[in-house]
Image 1 (spheres, rainbow, N blue to C red):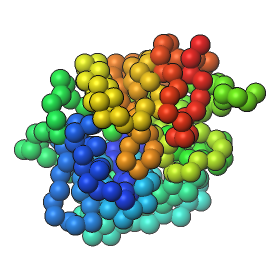
Image 2 (image 1 turned 90 degrees about the horizontal axis):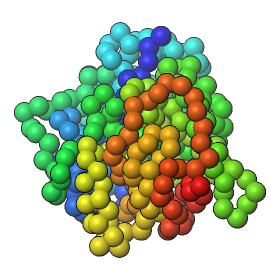
Image 3 (image 1 turned 90 degrees about the vertical axis):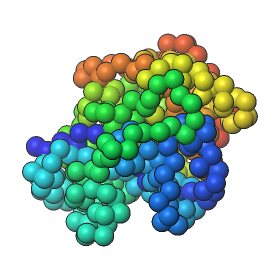
Amino acid sequence: MAKVTEFGYLGIGVKDGDAWREFAGQVVGMEVLDEGDGDRFYLRMDSHHHRIVVNLHGNDDMDFIGWRVAGPEEFDEMKRQLDAAGVDWKHADGEERKERMVLDLLKFKDPGGNPTEIYHGPRVETFMPFHPGRRMYSRFLTGAGGVGHCILRQDDVQAAYRFYTDVFGMRGSVEYNLPIPGTPMTVSPVFMHCNERDHSVAFLGGPMEKRINHLMVEVESMDDVGYTYDIVRKRKIPVAIQLGKHSNDQMASFYMGNPSGWLWEYGAGARKSIHQSEYYVADMWGHGAEASGFGMDLDMQA
């Protein structure tokens, strides 16, 4: 069975390109790369040409997510696995592969209708070292763990779980049972992993305005988390979840709003995936709720 190896790239659509350039470079610390395309620019985190494509067409949501496989053999096997699952897929043409800067590319939708891509052979530019958009104590932690993780909209969480397990070869389970404030209900998100990162994608049931709830990026040093938290507070950027430490991946992080109205988690210190199921009812410390309206109005404190 072919398995995905990492969450390799993300495409987002935005209304305010200037606000995103400022946010990505001066708040998050990414390298903003504009190659004169006119309708898009790129965000770098490491030696890959890019990890995020910012499309200037204005939907303020995720456009696509890219999952990497190891090489051409796994790529061909993934076609067969998609066929066996009854998924309609498109083999991208040369122009589409050139646009994504990969050797080969498949396009389809996951069970939640999220535009999803399988690829191998990303363009890696070791001759152009990553240059952060502002001062950083360390660098982004990518490598075998890929971009980070995201929470995606899924109307049927069990269907998504089966797809990402049976087709992508990922593993995972429910990792939290968290109260929804003001209601007797709890939410039980499913977290999936494909490499040493604790999770690369998670699914929330119920209605979500956007395809993506949040994107997490990890840095090597907790000093960068604190430094970024200060920047966010000084700029009065909304913080949905205050600085704290998760129980599942044991990452210290916070969640801030981005210019498109969804969340960006910034953290450090996560443990590697334990490859066994556990669940939690609260985080280790912190992570108090603050700004509402981002789809993360949960009680994460003991």
